Length: 85
Image (tube, rainbow, N blue to C red; front, side, top):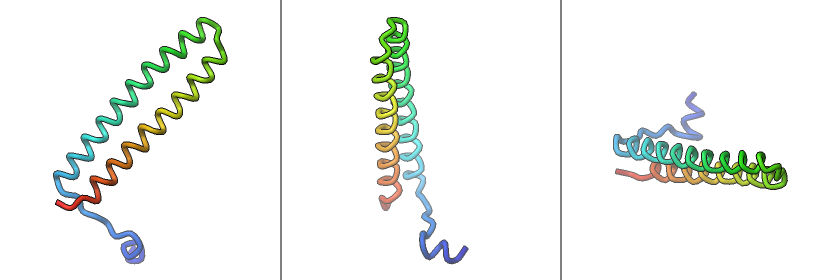
């Protein structure tokens, strides 16, 4: 346990940092829900039209968008963790 502390010391977050991280988390989840709702609707429309190439493209776009949104959220949370109040 002591070695772990030397390699990566635990950081105590301030209440402001915790609130900011929670807000970032909430915004990230909202963006994900919005993007999923929109693209899954588009996928359903493409499936109904039997446009399977478009379905595949939209599914890949969904994966890319969700990954990007998650990465952006994690970067913002890391920045908030590193801020000193």
